[in-house]
Image 1 (cartoon, one colour):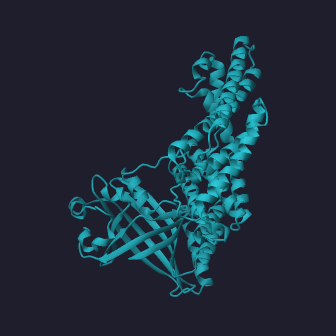
Image 2: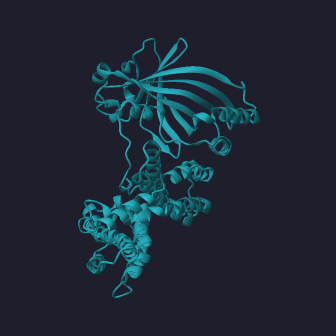
Length: 499
């Protein structure tokens, strides 16, 4: 068994010559020997018709290099900002069909039906590419830098491969990330979170790539220390961000950008805690802030969506005013900036931030504070954090729309903190406490929608309809009443972290 640890970078096919030039320059500066090797690799990937290997997050392939064939099994691993880590098992083979029984039975998950799967294996897709390889001396070993260019094929479907991999074979982690930064800067490379196998399953129509629309509780345990819990939370946020970025690249949508923004917010909240406890650099926070500043159009889009969504509270009433409704729909389309987000994702500044987060995660630096048991520490953190939120929400007998809007960001951050540590506590008590606060956050976001509506009615070219003005005024008053109800209900809830 070997542990595959590689940093994957994507390049645009038209940048192939430039990438080759940059790779050669980096190899020369590291005195790589031999200077360059090049060979053709053909890979066939296998699974059953009902994708039982995929269900276990297992990859299976046969790689052919001239007369040599090798079957490989890759087990479940981790992907963090382009760094892929997976246990890998390799066995030489003469056949064009893999034989799972050649592997040691101990490598398989519990209750893994080896013989049933072996009987039903079939080829799903193939990859055929030219690999150019340099072996760079680094640390106690080498970093294998490869440039792959070719195709993934499944039936009549075909998709190009153009990527650079930096595989650590005893080489320095810091050096691998330095090389990646150079490739981003000089060759326009960007972090890749999808493996060739994952892309092949998509091409074959055997998997879906859809945006994550909800943040799930991080699966941490009371036996862990603070550092372990925070790093797992940071990894969860980055994985959410990167998954949605892959969705944006695969099929651009606003939902994918919203998912990216949610992941970024969680990463920022956790990173702030790590920095307060002595690890991490504020430049990473600055990088995230610069990225999220270019996603501010989402707020207006979400407000317009609240007004025009067919299952929304305002759709039916506004449809009666056809010109107004049409202008809201058109404004929603006009506000979308998917092309700008794509340019942002491809920018060197964005890629440097993702690589910096990935490297920071893998180092997993610890301090004395981070080595404390997580349960008492998280209870105290949630207590202190929510005291600030509760104080802010209870300072005034009645809050205005502007007052609520000012409190939205700290409330969302506190809810995210609960997402990081909520797994440690009783689920029923936790959900009972969080529900009215979540309702409150949803209601506050709705204020933006009604502000947009008020502006649009006020600025209409045709004569203002008094009934429409009265209706939207009633909606704003009703929303404030609902917010007041949720606020009072939330303030009465017993904190779940005290039980």
